[in-house]
Image (cartoon, rainbow, N blue to C red; front, side, top):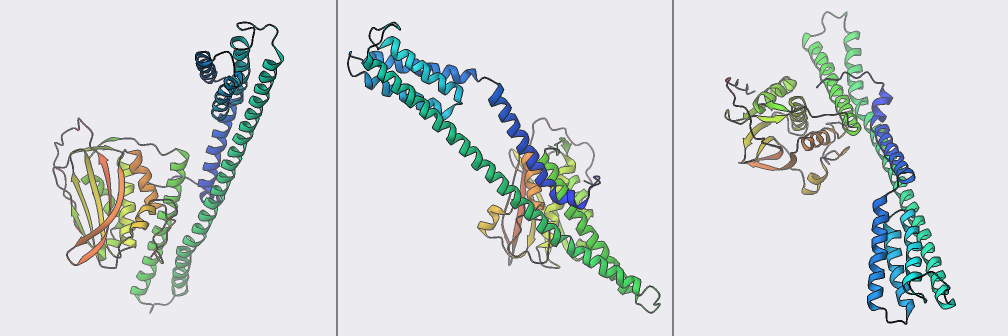
Length: 401
């Protein structure tokens, strides 16, 4: 994947926040429009059925006396509708309950003629209590909506703070290194005695920090696309061996001091996936392994086919991730407890999870112990689809570094 968007620093920093606000505002408008202008006939049908059912029960148990017991049963139906549906069906339930009580149980029955005062009093109480319940339910719904809005604003502000904090810290560090190295080169450009090795070291520093900034901005833009729904999966039948082979050259210089062990059987089936997105997942996992493993330690990439899924793992040495940390590490803006100098927004693994989830797979981490060495294994699974085409061309071997 490459960065083709031309955005300013402020747009990058607040992209996720704006996306979340737009989506929340849009959903709120949709909800308001549907609740104000669209009649939910199904709710009215349910309300009528509830009142009809309670009327049938009242008819079965009514013995000509204690009509207040019948009113209490109607109140139960009013409470049920008022707490679950909108104001329209709730008011309809109150009026329909009073009408049914007056017609079937207030003497003279089966009519709306002159009603004795004691029945009129019961009907008035039923109306007053019913409308009171409706008013309280409407107020409760408003308070719940207000609480949800306040929670959304809090989460949005929390996200904005996290983004600004990450950007201000993690982009400032590589920029300072690039500025320092460039200044040193400019200061010594007329010094013929300045050693070539020093120049190469400074140039490598500039290149390394530039690539680091590229990955930071790339992850931030990717997460913005994921949050906005612009990241679409375009599946096609691919070889996981070729995708791993395309991801490894991204780290050719950083892997020059490492020993990369690649274990991918040649007879693995093809998998229906988005080649570009899965390559980005492997790139992020390799970058994570390089950042959090000791210098000079081994890194392994393996793949294996199970009955219904393909599992790909990236294994690195280093301090083991705790069980509590492993449950949160794939969330946005979460970095390891031992993250001191590696830097990053804490988005790389969150992006991996979003991409793998979009493919219908899962991603997880667990401890990896081989002999006397220990480390962490990050694995993801992809479903093996039916009807995969057979590979007719010989697949090139991955170059082990």
